[in-house]
Structures are given as structure tokens and as C-alpha cells.
Length: 470
Image (cartoon, rainbow, N blue to C red):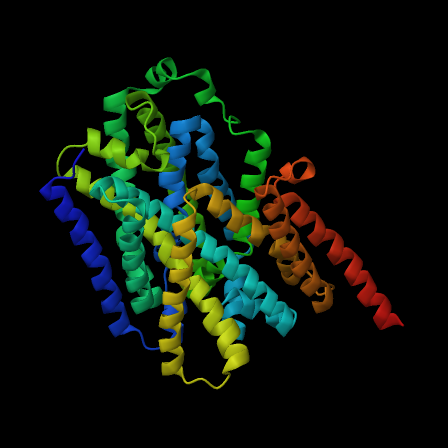
């Protein structure tokens, strides 16, 4: 199961191109607007590519294939939830977010939170977002390392250093323009490699649907095999996260007009569906052909190396690695923007000059990527790490954000404490469960987090109203 010279050449040429595009983007960018929102001039197709490259990444392809290999068609829920969340955000939020961003000059999600509430609410929203995006970045780097580990025969940590180093270099150097350039390439390679090349080879090697059903146990075709409670928590946390994920806002701000923001988001949904089917199908085919492989996260790479002809191996592995790296880059950039814009410029150095701000943005991208690598060094569960990020975002930020857009009745006092209490609940609940506490802590932390958010908003807003009346 070695990668030949031709395929290895394709793989390393791709990695070199990614770094080169980062340097090219660095030469073209004119300031912080270019670095964080690509100058607010992206069209609908580019916005769709950005959505797909960012969200349909390591978890969607590597993680979903691994889950389908281990548990069957229940692995489809991750990408299905992404499609639902993207659809709802496109229909109800993207154009409004674009209008607000242009009107107030927003670069980040916490910009919006402060404009609607106050500075301290911005701070706690920033902390929540940074925690979530470091977790997202770590999950993508775990997937990158899993691929390179199988390809190169290295140990996990050496592969992580290579993958993380490349992503950090081109993201820190080129910012959002680099992400845009690389995501065009990565999306096209992903669609070509996984859907138009991977699916036909999987069908040829393992058979059609009837053949898969005959070869695998019935449990592999149960959509609730991972437990319907887990499915519900996964789907709800992902869907709600679309409404509070900072890159959802950055992507809308980067559009050239509100129509591009909306249409690009909806176009992304169309492309997500075949990718969802393909990733699960490849997992099922791998279960038929290669039962008993221990490294579940590396099963897609194993399948490609064993079944694809020379030349196509390198191309498709580039497509899969592209999917992973394209998610990692935007997550790192998002965490960087949170620190640079929402903490340093807002509170530490308000008068920072544009060029110094740009240099600080690059350094903070390196820092965010480094933190993600530390987390990835310790954890190797792709979907588990990512779901933690989704849970933090959804539980703490969803209700205050939706109310901020839909009504003026909720004030800063209630929003601030709601986010604080919900975030504390999620982290504490997860820590207790990880420490082995049973009973009520077996419930996914999303649900108590959302409950605390709702109750605290209701009670604290009532308190604030009585104080004003008194």
C-alpha cells in the first residue's frame, strides 16, 4: 500500500501550489478588509465554493466515510445537517447579515453582537467563538494527519506537524484571499475526486446498492444506528451553529451584494447532497472490501490506495486532502480575526495602524493554528471534536443572536449573562461526562446548554424590565 512516484509527485505538487497561492494572495491584498472579507467583492459561485470548502471538509468526507465504514448509513447525518443549516441560513439570514455588515462596516460576528448589545457581550461572544473555532481547526488537522499518516507511513504526530505547518503558512500569509483562491481549486478537486471518480470506482469494486446490502449486516442500513439521541443532538447543534458561526457572517460580508450572499449560500446546498451520498457510499464499499481495518479515520485513504489506478490515486487523495485543509484554513482565519479585531483592536490598541493590524492578523493566525495543533496532538476523534465546537456555539449564542436580529426587546444585560451561563453549563457538563459522571450527565450538553440560555434570557430580561420600571 505504497504511494508511487507519480502519485506522490501529484500530492506534493498540490501542497506546493497551496503555499504559492498564499504568497500570491499576500502580494495582492491591500489591507484588513482584503485579509478578513476578501474586499467584499465575491460573487455567488465563489461564495458557494467558500461554503463547501469550509463546511464540507475533514469531518464530512474523512469522518463521515469512517463512520459509514464502522456504523453504516447513519454516517450521512453529518452532511445532511450541514445542508439543512446552510439552506435555512441562506433563506433567512444571509441577505440580512450582508446588509448589516455593509451598513456598519462589520468584519466579524462579534462586531454585530456589540452593535446590537454592548462591549462586554462582544467579549464573551468572542471567547465562545474562539473556543469553537480552535476545536473546529483541531478536528480538520486530525483528519489531515490521518490521511498523511497512511500515505507517507509516518507516525500520527509527524504527519500532524506537516499538515498543520502547510495550512498555517498559506492561511497566515494570504488571509481570506488565499482561502478564496485555494478553495476554488479544492472544491473542484473534491467534487471530481469523490463524486465523479470515487463513486464509479467504488461501485465497480464493491458492487451496487443491492450488493452492499447483501454483503453487510442489516445494522449498517439503520439510519439511527448511532442512537437517535446522538443523531438529534448532532443535527440540531450543527443547524443552529450556522446562525452563529462567525464564518457564516464573514462569508456574507465578503459577498459583493445581498443577492450574491443569498444565492451563493443556496447553491452550496445543491453541491452538498452528492457529496453526502458519495462519502457514505465509499464508507460502505470500504466495509465490504476491507473489513477489520483498525484505523477508522484512515479508511478512505486505505480504500483509495488499494483500488485506484496510478495517477488517479494522487488526484483523488489531493481532492480529499483539499477538503480537509479548506476547512482548517477558514477556521484558523476565523479564530485569528476574533482575537485581532474583537480583542486586540477593540480593547488593547484601538489606534493600531492598518499595516500593523495586518501583521498582527498574520501572527494571530499562526497562534490560532498552533493552539489547534496542540488540541489535535492530544485528541484524534474527528467528529467528536467538531461536535463539541458546534455545541458550544449553538447552545451559548443561538438564542441571543436570533433575538438580536428579530427583536429589540432583549437587552445587553440578559444577553451577556445568558451566554456566560450557557457556555459554563456546556463546558462543565462535558467535563463531568468526560470524568465518568453518569446519570444526568449522559445527556448531550447541547440540551442543558440551550435550556439554561432560554431560561436565563427570560428571567434576566424580566429583571431588567422591572429595574427600568422601578
